Amino acid sequence: MDHAADAYRTDLMTITRFVLNEQSKYPESRGDFSILLSHIVLGCKFVCSAVNKAGLAKLIGLAGETNVQGEEQKKLDVLSNEVFVKALVSSGRTCILVSEEDEKATFVEKSNRGRYCVVFDPLDGSSNIDCGVSIGTIFGIYIVKDGGEPALDDVLQPGKNMVAAGYCMYGSSCTLVISTGGGVNGFTLDPSLGEFILTHPDIKIPKKGKIYSVNEGNAKNWDGPTTKYVEKCKFPKDGSSPKSLRYIGSMVADVHRTLLYGGIFLYPADKKSPNGKLRVLYEVFPMSFLMEQAGGQAFTGKQRALDLLPSDIHERSPIFLGSYDDVEEIKALYAAEESM
Ligand code: AFP
Image (cartoon, rainbow, N blue to C red; front, side, top):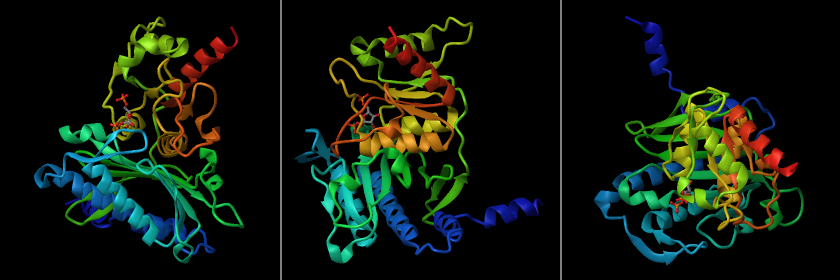
């Protein structure tokens, strides 16, 4: 009998234990971040349960409202947003919230205020809800600047200033991936325990991948470097094998696969959408933060994604992220075009 393996299986590293261990490395810590995270975890568990029950509970369907981007909101989006806003406000550790579903930022009442600003997309990939394909929550966390009243400038900061970022994927299992700036760790929800257990410690993205992930339906309108890059993926001239194409259309799922298997995920600019589609604060930044922490790169076509300074809470940006060497190739193509 393998007693060592048994000990491992019974010595569960829950996300709470993991965060408290991390916290103990900073004796001056007041535990605010751990409390905030426990409220985010609660939101993720609630949304996971709602997503799993959606078909049965007839939650699927339009709620008759549209969000900031003019897209139809589904009931699950509305529900997820409400759950996260309430969980974050009630943590008593937040001061500003920016949600994909709300046109304006939420400023938390003074009596309930803390130091953290949370930017999030409560349910990303909502067009995949009705067919049961993986969807997810994405979040990034800033600390409010010192002194004075919290202001929009506290969230209009470059992504490199985030103190933590993560996502929760509601798929065949519920997986929470998070970084507080010291690497990336993945936790899987054990439904029988109701606990997230560390299943993917210290995730590192392969240096080079064999997969590219993009909506090729937009190819007609791409710029030169993107067109050349995808052409290279399909018809490499250096004798290497062509890359495989995988595209789910849920950023969380596409990025999760990229993080684990390597490769590149791109949502480039095109003639119709010169800033791409994905939102800087709660899609591009958190995913770029995770990629860099896992040893990969994230590039906008012009600069390191985490250096971007957003001027609007719902701003969009093109994004190329994934394995270090793959992003290096797209950077070289943009540099070559620039020098022409
Ligand atoms: P929805 O929430 O409207 O499904 O959009 C999902 C998303 O923001 C992101 O999760 C995907 O990566 C991207 O859009 C897919 O966009 P396309 O449908 O244009 O490929």
